[in-house]
Length: 119
Image (tube, rainbow, N blue to C red):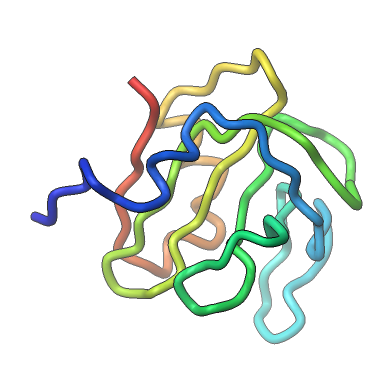
């Protein structure tokens, strides 16, 4: 099992970040038969593992968004892909690891991953 204590995204846990949403809640993936039950987008100016802006899930918001500013509550480390994901939520919202995993399972079920949360 890899050691995640030095994961490069770990420094963003607890940080306030801005996400530009390109797949709003309820939208369909452009290539796959997948509907997004949460807002999903990227953090501008923060490069992800694929060289594109860092991807992020936005949880705890029940309407489609264009942008979001919130707190990074978790990191999804994909063991079989180079695109790890951040998980953001509104300030003050607390979600358990099980709640986070349930909310992102629509897409993460296709990958072998681990969740890093702030202790």
